[in-house]
Image (cartoon, rainbow, N blue to C red; front, side):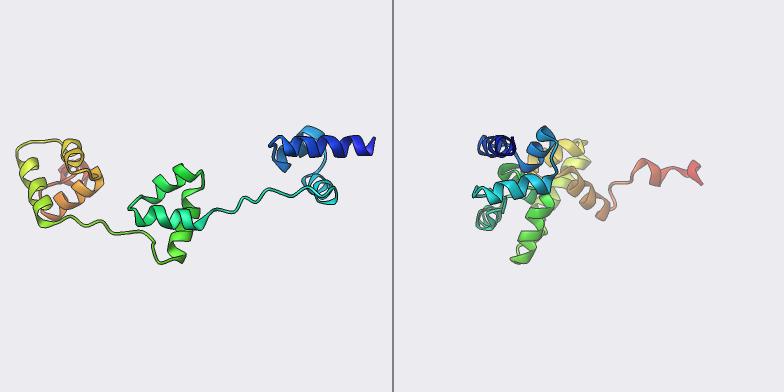
Length: 147
């Protein structure tokens, strides 16, 4: 009976089930399932992230979010690894031509979304520069009735 359970655990693990899933299916604790696998000589899967891939993608200019989606790792894990290798969050500055373009397009009446899309930048970055130039005031800031 005991060996049947051990065989079932080994089989499920070899089929790709996680230890946590096996413990749910068998009604055994996580620790018990893990111990059975270790005692029966099964090599446990290693969920370590390949840091070299993360670093390589970051050097190619990919964002932490894009890396996390591609490698199926949490964004915070990617950021932690990048920070450890001094590749943390990058400040993406706009050059003076891009800032002038934002100003001109906004004065022509273009939407913030359209400006951001054309520059390949976020709407937040566009709004940031418009505020810095004194061209953009949010509805909440300009309302005199909110006193």
